[in-house]
Image 1 (cartoon, rainbow, N blue to C red):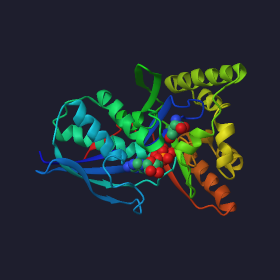
Image 2: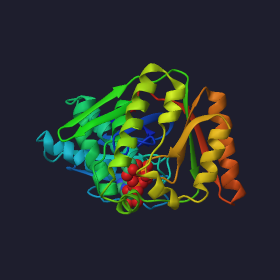
Image 3: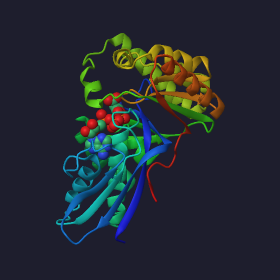
Image 4: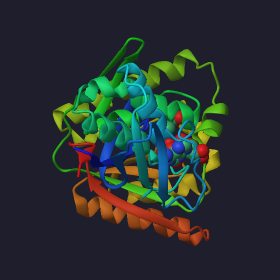
Amino acid sequence: MNSIRAFAPATVANVACGFDIFGFAIEAPGDVVEIRRRDEPGVVIKEITGDEGRLPRNAEKNAVTVVMLHLLKHLGIKDFGAEVVLHKNMPLGSGMGSSAASAVAGVVAMNELLGNPLSRQELLPFAMEGEKIASGSAHADNVGPSLLGGFVVIRSYNPLDIFTIPVPDDLYCTLVHPDIEINTKDARFILRSEVSLKNTIAQMGNVAGLVAGLMKSDYELIGRSMVDVIIEPVRSILIPEFNVVKLAAIENGALGCSISGSGPSMFALSKGKANAESAGLAMQQKFADAGIESSMHVSAINKNGAAIL
Ligand SMILES: Nc1ncnc2c1ncn2[C@@H]1O[C@H](COP(=O)(O)OP(=O)(O)OP(=O)(O)O)[C@@H](O)[C@H]1O
Ligand SMILES: N[C@@H](CCO)C(=O)O
């Protein structure tokens, strides 16, 4: 096998109360990576489409190839020759897990080209190295769901303990991406390092409630638990019209609404596709009223994650 194509989906990280510990995959959009073996040693980026020339072409700097280099080193494979084409189908700094999608598609494609020496779970630490190059921190709540699919919980980072939980079949996600950019690195820099006991207790309650609501298909409990008292109050100031858009989502069918990842995208969860679409249109209207263009994606939770095409 000399060439492989892999797809990795967009993801919603944090999911309101679960900063760095919750994430889920959606069906589209996502990045596509093509990798082809070559005789000459070294992994090189042959072409990147869809990034307006903004991403690094240096294989040591791009999330899509950094993960491949880490995987080859781990397997003790030297002088491996491959050329990589990356199709970016997601905006940068979007809050949709753009760098994670590249990292996951890249590591899945390379693993397949090598005959699948590692399982999906075993590929996770390598995908996290892609996040590290992109955002300065190896958080797993975008790469985890993009790689494994479904709704992912990261119980622990050291040692890494990550698993998926069931979600109700009729749960739909609305993702609205306003036409602005927020870099994850910046959105992490502004966070406080200390949290009050009162807020910790509230956040733990919501984390427990969201997990229970998802596993019991209790839509009301899911909605009540989508409250973030720690991160959202700090980061929402980076998103124009945040409060108005969030209220519009909930008044038009959503169970709950918050920031997707580090933003600026906002996401809502709804029971049924019709509610998800209605909430999304209301969210977009509020952005439009403020002169802000946006794009909308409505999707069930993608239970498969990355795929070989
Ligand atoms: N293949 C890649 N795709 C996207 N970003 C990359 C990639 N490789 C390196 N980067 C770097 O990561 C930065 C974007 O990462 P960042 O985490 O800020 O946003 P994102 O991954 O696009 O979206 P999200 O906020 O959902 O994580 C880019 O500015 C770029 O410098
Ligand atoms: N948990 C990460 C996700 C980034 O997409 C953050 O919020 O910084």
